[in-house]
Length: 251
Ligand code: MG
Image (spheres, rainbow, N blue to C red):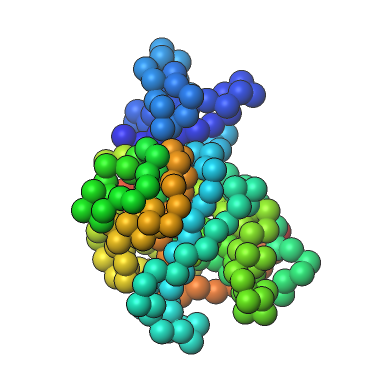
């Protein structure tokens, strides 16, 4: 099932893909989906929103060995985690704003996990029981500021630095999905989730040993090799097998 969040007549709505349409559902959000209604809208012209509103976005750094290497780092021996603020969220087709403080803003295409249930101290083997589904993310990064600061916070947290969507796919095995990032149609990252250093179970066990994950929280699972800069006017797409394409433009 593919769950969307969108504007319908100016109001926030949720719905489920049915061919070329999105059928509107009752319910508060994707983590509390209700019943199908008789109302549907065309999918291709829908005003999509980030598919979920998280209380926090937890991101995993250097989770693909080839990407760690391209930035001069070793693959880590335990997950490296950091936070991105929900204020950084950007909907599909929204505009990534390059801030004046940075001369180098990079794309990072990533598989995102959407949490479905409050989760604390979850064993790796039980990870799927707390997960609603998966979506595409772009962990946009001011690379120069990330390198300059001790913390990742500033470089990862500007408004518009977390494009998310287009939908949450609830029925998906994330262990070997192709992940492709294109800029202006040219392939820049061509990875596969099988190359993650820490898989979804290991990541969820690690994070929930630290903090409680709430329904709707999002985990960005790291980016494969091939990251690079974005320029004004670029169109960046993150496509993950079985989910879809997250497209944004850059200003
Ligand atoms: Mg990243």
